[in-house]
Length: 267
Image (cartoon, rainbow, N blue to C red; front, side, top):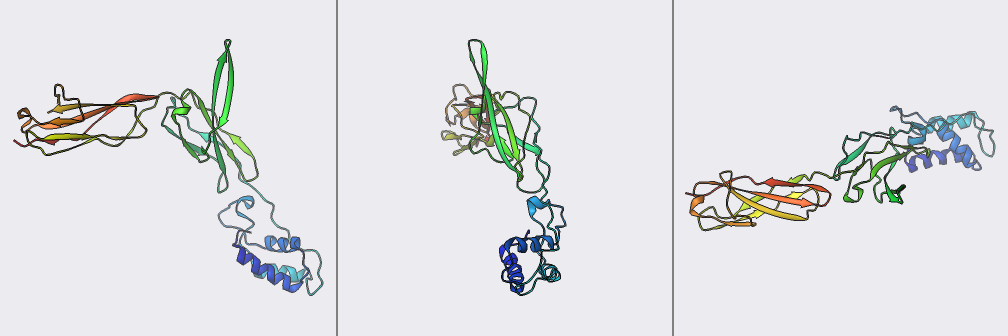
C-alpha cells in the first residue's frame, strides 16, 4: 500500500486475530485489494496500491470465511502494478558550452525516476575514429553542469523507471568554450582622498580562472600605468569617478572582464 509501516502492521494484526495461521500472501492480498486508490493518479507501481482501509480489509476477510483456524482463498484482487511511461528529453542549445547547465525537460512522471549523465568522445588512430563513452561519476541528478573535462566531448542522459525501463536522450553537440559568469562583481575599498591607496577586490566567477589583470579608470578613461590591484590617488583624481576593470582568462572559457561600481574622490 502507500501507508506507513505501523498502519499496515496494525491492520495485519487485525487479520491475524481472525486466523493466526493466515499466510503472509493472503494478508498482502487483503491489504492491497481493499486499499483506497490514490486520488492524484500516481501509478500503483510507483506509489503503492493506495491508502490502507482497515474496515474493508477485515470485512473482506470475514466475507471469505476467515475465522479461527478456518477460511478460504481471498475474494479480493490487488491492483496490478502500473508504471508511468519512461521518456528522456533534453533541450540542447545550438552551441553547448563548458559551464552551461543542462536539464531533463521530459522524464518519468511522479516519483522514482533515476538519472545518469554520460560523456562520449573519440580518438583517432591511423586516420580512423574510435569512439568511447563513460558514465560521469556523481552526475545522477535531473540536471548537469558541463565541466572542463567535457570540452570537445558529447553529452547525453539516461532515465530509469521503477520498472527498470531505460530511455536515453539525444546527444548534445560537441561541448565548446564556455562563458564565465560573474557571481559577485569586483569592488573598490580605501579612503577617497588624494594620497591614499585604493584596493581592487577580485570578482567571484562561476569557475576558477588562470590569470587576472587590472586596469584603473578615471571618469571612464584609462589611467596610464595603473594596472595593479592597488592604485594611489593623485591630484588628477580630485572630484573624479574611479573604477577598475578586472580581466581574466580561464582554460576552456572565453577571456572576459568585469567592472566595478564607481567611487568618487573627494575634492
